[in-house]
Length: 268
Image (cartoon, rainbow, N blue to C red; front, side, top):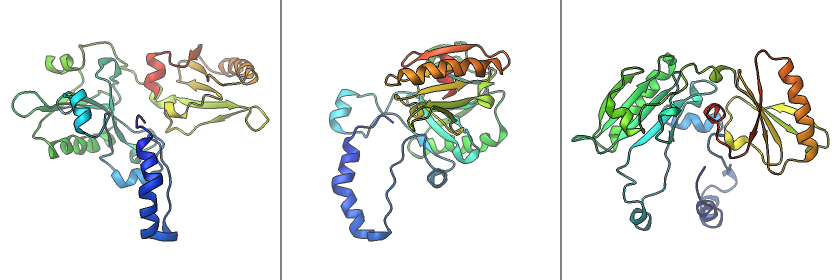
């Protein structure tokens, strides 16, 4: 998601030719974006599909970020369309991102003699996610000697809260995980229409040329892309009012790009 174009260009102009020479016509190349991976790709890594932030440790970058290998890392474990879509994705060190229906891993390299890995288990966690979470937690010990500590929600030690910026209010209902729906509103074919995205969506599915509508079950957000046409915006604003009228207790919110909202961000 945050990679530069250098890696893609290197593959296109150098490595691709080498692969074509080795495999010939049997070679199939498919470009995959983060959190839009097909099932066959996810299955190769299941259940330890871990996505880290950052970069490859090179001398120039280590000079700029000397703490890259020693700073704490916070991960969210979540599946959206069954156990095969389970991902462990690094997120900000922020207690507000906790959710009672999810599992989290906090890796602290410099803690005591060995460092510590906390596995945080929410009160509403699905049992089917617990075993993969245990395996993922153990995988952190392959590269460094960590002590593993399992924490149930409500039993967190002070050290846990200190690392993620202090105890704060977070989502303890997690209703949006069961009822979130994302719709793309566009007239790219010459006819205006609304089409629902599949459940395994992320913020990369938001398209600047269109208008997107997100129903979290308790709120309806209207996201207007910077390059969306006036026609798309006007028609969607009328359509969303009709949509809300047919829902129960769903207030309507207009969400501007780059504007942070906890309910909106948490859905992704």
